[in-house]
Amino acid sequence: MLVTLAVILMGIHTAKTVNESESSVARIRSGYIEKQRGLLKTEAHSFARIIEHERDKQLKEAKTQVRARVSAAHAVAQNIYRQYEETKTKQEIQKLIIDALRPLRLDQGGGYYFIFNFDGVVKLFSDRPEQEQVSLLEKRDTRGKYVVKEMLYIVKVGEEGYYSYHWSKPGQEGNDYKKIAFVKRFEPFDWVIGTGVYLDDLESEMRKAILKYANGRRFGPNGNGYVFVNELLNINGGEAFARVYANPNRPDDTGKPISDDYRDAGGKAFRKEFLKGLREHGECYVDYQYKKIGDQTPSPKTSFFKLAAGNRFIVAAGLYMDDMEERILVMQTDLENRLRNGFLVICVVFFAAVLTVWVLAGLLNKKLENDFRIFAEFFNIAACSSRFIDRKRVRFRELDRLAAFANNMLAQKAEAEKELFAAQAGLTEAQKIARMGHYFYDVKRDQWSNSSELDTVFGIDGAFEKNISGWLEIVHPLDREALSDYLRDRVLARGEKFDREYRIIDRKTGREKWVHGLGDLRLGENREPVEMFGTIQDITERKRVDDALRESEARLSGIVDSLADWVWEVDAGGRYLYCSHKVEKIFGYAPEEMIGKTPFDFMKPEESEKNPKGLQ
Image (cartoon, rainbow, N blue to C red; front, side, top):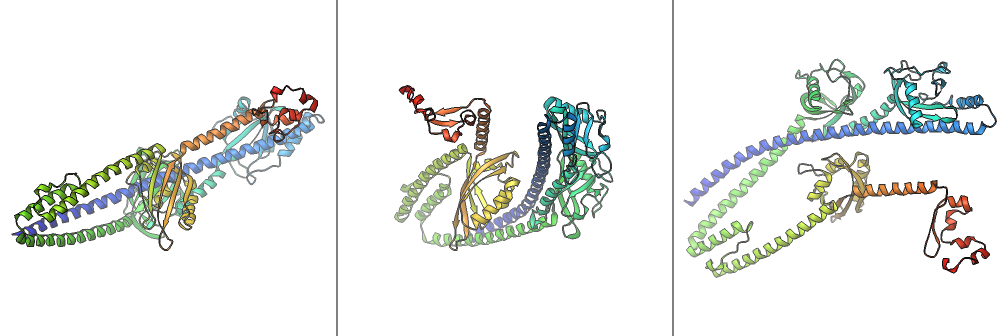
């Protein structure tokens, strides 16, 4: 009867295992595909942020450069004016200034200086000298803007400023080149001095940076996933709705137009589909067939498309389905092997237990059965309860000793759980207050685990892939390469402690943060890195306070230096602790000569003796 029952139970367990296996395979497939789609979205969003950062950086650098150039030209004009204002006529000085600036060429000949007066009359136009001595007040650019009038308004209101317009370009046909200029008033002659930079010159530098990132970024199973970007010309589609901007799978097509009528190997007009998704939602997923890098054979592919940089670009990230299927197959095979091995272990254990019970049942009496029942109840609830064994119910002396040991073990377990809970609660609260989380990194497995507070600092959840690649994705793009080199070359290679302040991008909010990471590396028997334990603290607020303090100190120093009088500070003994720079102009002593001395050290002896003793 016992054997029959065992066979029935094993049959039920086998059927249940088969059903669970099938459902687990389905969950693995859907879960993995959904995870990879999430990866595509993350990659595209990250690429979009990099593009916007590069655009802003190039524009900022251009503005800084053009302003510096105008300031230099203004300084040249000012020096010439001051040098000759007493010895030459106004017209002679003006000619000297114009002659000094006329031959100067910037940006490999594409940039030049221009000057016009408050009446709009051009005094210097190096690219078009035939327009000098002509009023351009009514001159408009290709967008209808009164360029000279609006530049005059800028300098009359604020003395200087930036101005964006469309203009001709030296050596090029047409007059529709977008340009950013900086203009500054030259007060002695009521002139406007300026120069500019053409945005198409900045575009080439931005394209290089974006193409470098796209060519170097690979992700997903087998490393075949990549990002690409097209410059959008018409979101409604058409024969040339976009241009290839950066695509590692089409390097020779950069700058070429693409049509929405293109169809993949299955006849699908997938470009029309993603354009529709972009018009309606700004981003979308599309399935289609496309060749892999280095392989002309079309393969099923899933890509995520997103509008970026004010709808100027279409940014996309794609993965190939056959790579995902290959990885899913490995996961399914691993699951099946684990289920098979587990089933065999269960069979062996189950039948061994049945045989043991069968033998013991013939040898032991009802008292032994009673004691086993007591212990069975105890072990069934011991994991989730603190209920002790009632030793009065145990009839065998040997088992009574085991019951005493089990009760003692349960008491120690309850006390340990209490202490552990209190310690964990204290640690969690301390980390929350300090905005600090701890982590444990397994070097060989390339996996790290962490406290919940570190998830908050990074803006991640349980689905985030916690390995070195995942951590580097959190690190700010501008710090990523340096931090990767630091971890590889100094921490893992040399065994140094990890101690670095660096920037991250909060995965949840997209906000930039500063963190301070610490870590101790444990080495194995052969001095190879095994694991690292450490902490990471959010120091964004501290960085903000430090910046504010430096700015306040600089502002105070500027105020003190701008005063006509000198400012000083003395201690209780009358010794100078601080002196502003004006002291050198007033008394002829440098500030460092005054520090540590009293006012009487700089008086004649007879004047010093007149001083009341109470002031000494």
